[in-house]
Amino acid sequence: MRTVEQLLTYPKISGKEVKEYLDLAVGLVEHNLKDFTEYFPDSNSQNNFYPQTENVEWTTGFWTGEIWLSYEATGKEAFKKAGEVQVDSFLKRIVDKVDVNHHDMGFLYTPSCVAAYKLTGNETAKKAALLAADNLMARFQEKGQFFQAWGELGAPDNYRLIIDCLLNMPLLFWAAEVTGNSDYAQKAEAHIKTAMNYVIREDHSTYHTYFFDPQTGEPVRGVTHQGHRDGSAWARGQAWGIYGCAMAYRYVKNPEYIDIFKKVTDYFLTHLPSDLIPYWDFDFDDGSDQSRDSSASVAAVCGMLEMSKYMEKEDAEYYTDMAKRLLLAAAKECAVQSPEQSNGLLLHGTYAHASEHNPCANRGVDECNTWGDYYYLEALTRLSKDWQLYW
Ligand code: GLY
Image (cartoon, rainbow, N blue to C red; front, side):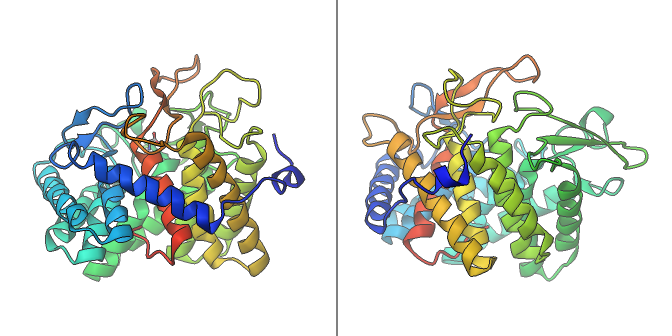
């Protein structure tokens, strides 16, 4: 655990370092286009190298997002062309309904297709993202007022929301804006309200998932899926909470969400180990041999940088500076330095770690993962200019 006084002693990433790490990362993305234009990187690397995959799982949009961020950084046509190939793949995926029977339409379609539409006016991208938003809307449960994450709709053993879904909500706010149909935004607001009510515990750690009664919609209980145990704070879940609060405030403008953000973020910051790279669950601290999850750190950094836009000056500076400390630590400890080392950007992530209290098998342990790479690049981009976000 860290005290605030300790955290304040860590160095912050400088403008020069941001530029150097950004140039390095964009160069690596460019190098990897040859393998990942017609194909996508798998969710996580194996021995630090991603195998190629088709457009499946909840994670392929992050790679396309890296392509769009690199296009913004360089203006190079090669990125635009590759991004367009991938947008076509995303339209085909949603039309053919390939692996879209879940809630992660935002993670998939925001950094890929909303980004393409915002940056280049690509109409295929707009169409694909709106179809994805409609697909997500079909998962809204009136009883309980939330988007059901996984599985058969209404099934009692799947009648739950997960904290990650806060990052799927921007797709719906975007859909409301471009179509003029406020139903997207109303359901997103309702889901956010439900999630904020139940996933945040008294000590401001968070539940990964929360079950409701399908008959009455009454809250039942918080349960982990990828955390160490039901009552622990899964590091990435806490990070989704941080960025999720920032997104919630951006779109709903409820001041309570700033307050919740501060508490959830402070929990994250004060539970970091001494090198500022979180273990996969905050049950673990200095001296543990458990794996780290660098992706949790960079997602939290993006959330802090976003929420700082809406805070009073003193708080904004505090969280921006903390974000800069975490980003420097992540870059120094985890940034890939050359294509020979890895075809990702950020080492030392954990997709899922088995424990006796969760249903997971080990997957992507001490590996790159595509969302870690994406949020790392987004964080560097945010610090390099006044970034107009895809989310
Ligand atoms: N959204 C799933 C995960 O963070 O692993």
